[in-house]
Picture 1 (spheres, one colour):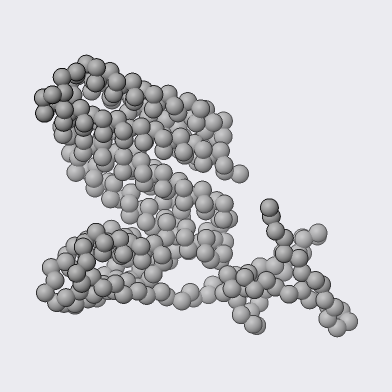
Picture 2 (cartoon, helix red, strand yellow):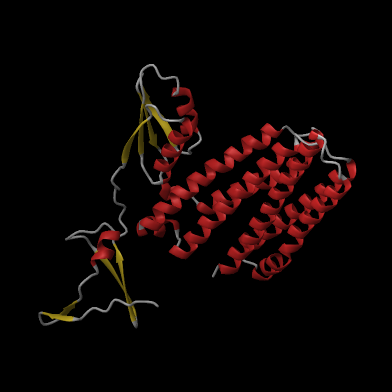
Length: 333
């Protein structure tokens, strides 16, 4: 149910009327007494807007104590601080700590965050990117391009024609873009001024947040497929069938991204309806492979079957994300 905030019109002097402003709107737009409000007369509607003169936002700073913490926990804290919009992140550690190089690697994977100062007990990183100048659409397109290339190359890992490390490095590139996109979208959803500078409303920002999440998950799936394929031995027929299924999913991914860019709901609807064919093909492949390799008592054969099952699991996950993108396109106005 939509709740409309109704305000009473009050007479002020002989020629003016006043109406009170919701406190929540004032606080959301960082307004105070004496600030200017733009008034647009659109006939039946009177549109009030916060003055669009750029205001310097308060810089957020956080200090993280790294002493005695596992690297994964520390990484989570640093990344969370970045995503939550902190402009300066200070990491504190013991003078005899050997974690400084690993901390620097974490910071390098966060776009716009640069190390400004380093001492024997402290690393200080500062964000140098103006999020008002970041195009979320460009981030999505870049993530799309990298993920497509990963899909094309990942199947070659089983024949030694592609180094899995190359896929891993590209996944890191996608992660950097995802973190940057998430940071921009989160700030825009919390600050209407930023959203307006990006030309986005809250629903569009929500859909774009879903898009970068889907693309990041797809890249993760390609990373895992490459890792598992490099450790598995497939006969020629199985490899050809797996390649066909993967290529089919990749072509559908290209089609759904085209539908997203052009807002082609008919194409997106068709992809959503036929998406189950892709997951069914994955299940059929695994069933046939298991039946053609019945003797799993041998340890190496059992390990091979487990790796093949993991490859198929991530192929299915990729197909599901393609379907989710199609559903997002159907929600675009």
